[in-house]
Amino acid sequence: MSIQQTSFGMVDGKEVLLFTLDNGKIQVKITNVGATITSIVTPDREGKMADIVLGFDDPKTYLDPEYNEGGFYLGATVGRFANRIKLGKFTLDSKSYELEINNGANHLHGGINSFNTKFWDAQPFESEKVAGVSMTYVSAHMENGYPGQLTTTVVFTLDDTNSLSINYQATTDKKTIVNLTNHSYFNLRGEGHILDTKVLMEASSYTPRDEECIPTGEVASVMGTPLDFTFEHKIGERVHAFEDGYDHNYVINGNYGQLRKAAEAWDDKTGRKLEFLTTEPAFQFYTGYWLKNNNKFGRGEKKFVQFGGFCFEAQHYPDSPNKPQFPSTVLKPGETYTQTTIYKFSAK
Image (tube, rainbow, N blue to C red; front, side, top):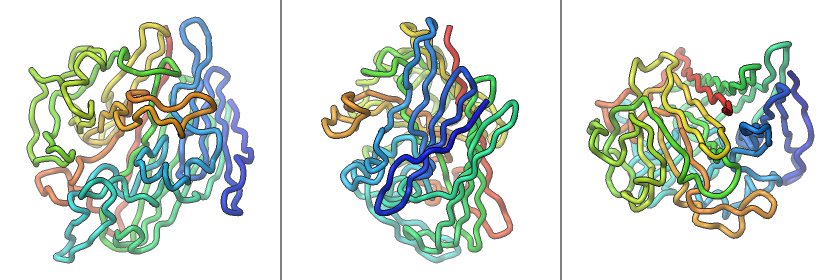
């Protein structure tokens, strides 16, 4: 079990750090720009290694204006509010706040220059059984339009069971809203599309959305719809039932706040499997429609392809500040926001 800190290059006169977590079986790389997972290398059933998340070899790309305006957020820690807020507006204690509009008429993932573009303070650690890095960012009052100075710490830990745990904590000095996630795109073959990937979910309901991915306020059953993954299905079987593929918020079965399995995915060709667990009430299942065969962004010679990665984004429901019937995302002074999400890797 080891962690190695290296330079990932210079951006705007600042050194970017890269942390490599290695348990002798899999390797995870994380940079302090955006507290971002840049690489996860795992073996297939034959022992062949491949990088199964989308990312970049050049740190400048993570801060490229065109990339950030595209709304990709590859591997990043997303905040202050993951997913969408309708019209970028919400009210706290009768005071209205307006956020950046960066997704049609709405606010997405904290804005363009949000947590994913910030330099986080990083502290690596290791022991006989784990290796990891703790990253902290202090977001000023009214940064990106959000009230309160928010101090966020995200701890990435790799153990000897091939589990990558992500533990979040956040505190504020003024009443605010918080909804954090990790936005890794997985591709269990390491390249190409993910339409043959099989998915099984512990989620029997979802939040119906409008054409802009804003929840209507209802919670509905997935049964009898193309959203039903309570039995295994390939992503590609029904992905074209939706114009933009899957980009939906699933409500996880069981008790919110307890760590429980939310979903799993596997690839028959390679044998690779991903298990996804979280304490959050929901997750966004996104299948990379907007990657759009991009000729500029990719890793080395491999450029993005449409449906080139899928995301399991642990979260509260989108637009929660404007939907009082949804679980609250309000954080008050003296309280601590917490979340645990685990991605576990195997092959058979």
